[in-house]
Image 1 (cartoon, rainbow, N blue to C red):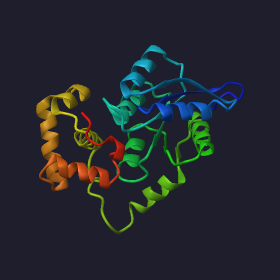
Image 2 (spheres, rainbow, N blue to C red):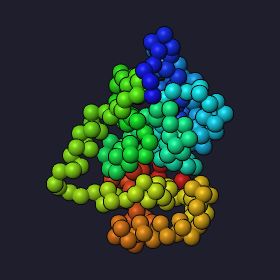
Image 3 (cartoon, one colour):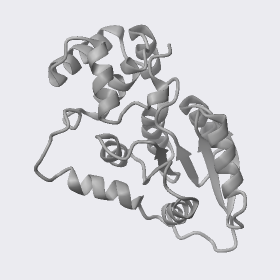
Length: 226
């Protein structure tokens, strides 16, 4: 991505399934002369469709992770692959666990938590628009500490796809629905479930739910609801 024109605004798309979050981000960013919020959406599917229908109309996407449907992980993967010029900044409640590293490796260029301030969000938007990566200081510290000796996180050994399936199972999404969302066969999803049970040394999806909540890949307010 090339250096932005100082005379043009950075066009931002907000993707979050909470209306109040979308409204809050839009209101905060709307006070900045250098930023234009072009649209607010509530799901990964909507984000992909919007990017397809409005090619070249957005510079930065602020992307939540835990959303209905394909969620932020799959949306980030698909958008970064199809439209690599779009800078995706993850904004979520998770500051630890495997998600920051996996999402940054999977195409995201920035990572913030919803506890970071608006000034840091604006800095992240500017940096990513100018071709840089931005990781909030608290997340960078967690990533650094994750390589130190100490308590191991059982989710660190999961692939991005395994983490994604884990999140969907933990949210109560049925096998058939997961297969439709990820465009994989139900048999493949069942294989992922079995592999997750083995890797995490659990005997049930309920135990996986507890691990997902303990190690920060599932929001408290997004427990099984499907």
